[in-house]
Image (cartoon, rainbow, N blue to C red; front, side, top):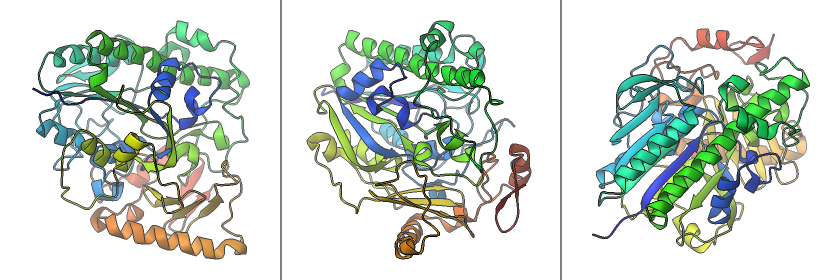
Length: 477
């Protein structure tokens, strides 16, 4: 029997594109991930669909935007929610499973009902919630609730390696979702191995600016001292290095079993992260109103397949997580017709040829509740429903997004042009019944399906002490 391509999909949690050595970071220790990049394809401009975990993850797997799948904010599962938020929706995992792939998930799911297998997975070692401690993490192991005593990054990897060992003995190909909770908080020294924290003992973290607090920020990660800041960054960077160390174990196992050449490895994160950038410690919900900074919406993306994908391929055009589903299915030769119109386009041919379209017609769209973004090669426009504040940046000359041009009369036509493009695009895909622009999404967590929340304002009030909500806008206290 001709062997199909195995797939390992590595998804980290809250990792900005700027964090890795292959993206220019001089502070991080990430040799394994950098090697994956050098021996494969690295994407310089890859974007999440929403800058917070649950909607971003749902978009990765379904290829749908939040206003199609109905998850608009991180899912507040601390009330033991057993809802399956993707029930009756197609994911590329279910499609792979239906096409004879042996599918396993180890790590973070955060799309509801962690106690039960979903979407064609046959093996399941899943975090109970969206995050938590790195030691004694609450996990469901094949349906049984446990408190995992191991460092959770190690435990996630160990379960994945056991699966690879078992799956490699079978004739059909395997799919492994390796979903690390790292580098999500908590970052305290009690949560991470001392030997990894010590690697950053003398690091000054020049890659993390100590900017003035952003006027929209909602909370501080630390009280303000430099010692506290350094300790937070040590934990964040150490958690990434622990992922790197564990990925080497995975690759070593593939080489030991002589299946590295049979395995496509994909590395990305659910959303970006600010660690001092723009005066924020957080992602899209690190401010109120929610933000769409590059550091929040841009993620690392690496495709590696030994002797199949060209080495040292650096791709410059704009791509989105909603492009993964069509790309992955084309890569493994599965033809699939979606039940609904999807926004993504396959970049399979780019992986083979290295030739891409880098003109200004390539456009990326994001949404986070009432906040929507349109981004092309040179410009970014952010629209907040119903009444602002809006933003316009010339990314070509202002990549740090320091100069909002929205009130500049000189750019009035550009604003109108981009707003029109944004609204026409979303009209094509939005399900009016779960339209994020009309949902009360404040970044404080979603309970239940879209349209049935009811409790969002109360959640919001508990979540932030720096802002209050009025019917017209978000205003500072």
